[in-house]
Amino acid sequence: MENINPTYVSERPSGEPAFPWYAVRTFNCQELKISRYLQENGKEHFIPMTYAEKRTHEGKPKRVLVPVVHNMLFVRKDEPQKQMLHLFASCNVPLHVMKKEGTMDCYEIPDTQMTEFRMLCDPGFDGTQFLPADEADAKPGKEVMVIHGPFSGMTGKLHRVRNGYYFIKTLAGVGVMLRISRWYCKVLPEKQ
Image (cartoon, rainbow, N blue to C red; front, side):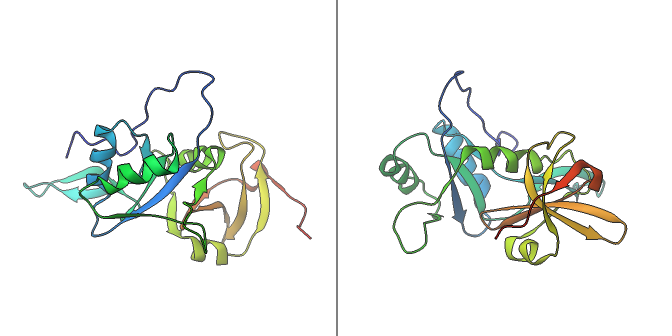
């Protein structure tokens, strides 16, 4: 499985429109097999990954990338829904595209939200925590905008844990919690 790239990104010509993304669920931890299929078909996709320590056959510890959330990946919608669904139906691994509630239309994630989410999911950041969206949404905190650093312009929730602060953002059932200085954030006015 070394040749699988779970964050396959095709070269985008400059000026190309920003396409939305689909959230795709699979079963029995098959997200890397779907990743291989999408890569073979030239489809940009993303699987949130994190580092974990695994043991080699010799019993030595080794840091490897593993999916943060099993059974979930995101696929860039660069064709009409009908063609995308046909591509998914041709995959030999069972999968399900998340739908808008009460409809048969696929739920589309705007490219700007997906770009922010991908930045927050960078496995190079230490201390990033991933949790179910309902758990992330239940954590108390104020709505903020990050005004300094690499996440400048992003909005989310600032949550305090003991003496530290965490920036929380949720997308399609996944919550990302990243340690941040509260001085990097500006509290937004409360929504009426």
